[in-house]
Amino acid sequence: MDTAIISAVLPMLIKGFWVTMEIAVVGILLGFLLGAVSGYALQGKCRVARTAAGVYIWLIRGTPIVVQALYIYFVVPAILSLIEGEQVTMDSVLAGIIVITVNAGAFISAIVKGALESVEIGQIEAGRALGLTEHQILWHLVIPPAFKMMLPALFNQFIISVKDTAMLSIISVNEITRQTQNYVARTYQTIPAYTMCAVFYLVLLSALMILQHVVENKIKK
Image (cartoon, rainbow, N blue to C red):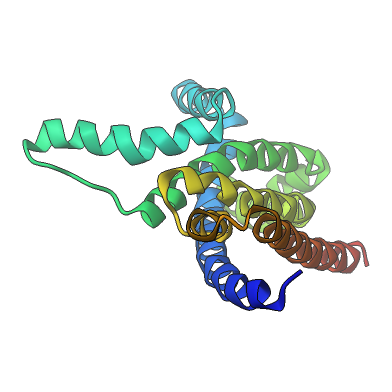
């Protein structure tokens, strides 16, 4: 591969990397909050909350992330424009964060629900026997072991979210894939540019998977 192409493409990929990580990190953090609320609602006693969480998860898991990105970037501003009576636009990075948030949240909700339900009932009963309130039992006896159990799955979801950011190129988010597309559109250097993009993703995701493995081993100890 021509070194001139490498020197031209690599800075663009690094620039896209920072956008990718910004969206993925913020999206997974907000997605965890959304997923935690939804997951708790799914195994709670409130029928309205369970139904609302179930509908949200059904909508997100039942539609492709590309369609979600197009809807949030184009349709939501159009609806707001009709309501406000003036043109409303949305920043593509903000739209990308929203997409990753709602998408990750739907899958994290299942992780949270499973982790909460897997906590030994004996711990809860022991807490009640000691006179702890339900709130104290939740925060001190349920959430700590549940979070430890869900951490590997959460890390895996983060890796998935990093990969999902490539889909955001369809709404002009200048992440790694979009940066590569921009270069190809100007130079027509299809093979070397997309090859570098693939290798860049492979290195990035391999590093994240190694980090995930390290974290999982520490948790098991």
